[in-house]
Length: 156
Image (cartoon, rainbow, N blue to C red):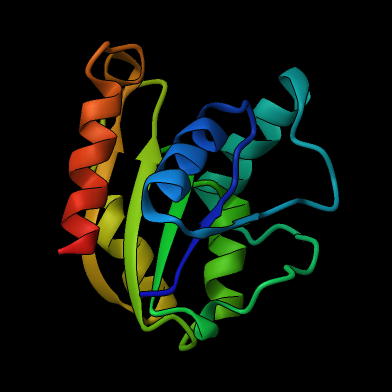
């Protein structure tokens, strides 16, 4: 099974989870990069506005083609109850090329499990399962075990 982990991370938390998932899956990794910065307080404000408006945000071209993989794991932080705008842009661009997708999200607030299947559907992919991690789970000593269960579910 050829797997690709595609993620966007503003603070680094989503990146850390993505790299753990990729390591456990033996997957290639693709980080979504934006053309403009979302760093600092101004970036945080801009990210919330884009999320609420469901606005696409200019991203740099990716190097890997999602359609070349059997499964694509999509990861993003939650902004205003939705996946980060750069991930939404990626999903719109990849629509119809991703065969099967598993998704994970990170949230500094309340869990947002309802967006997981929506991410796969936005890409036009078959949904294999998801993982929603809130602030408490991200700090949990059981985080590695939670990630391992998620990856085991993908492999099955």
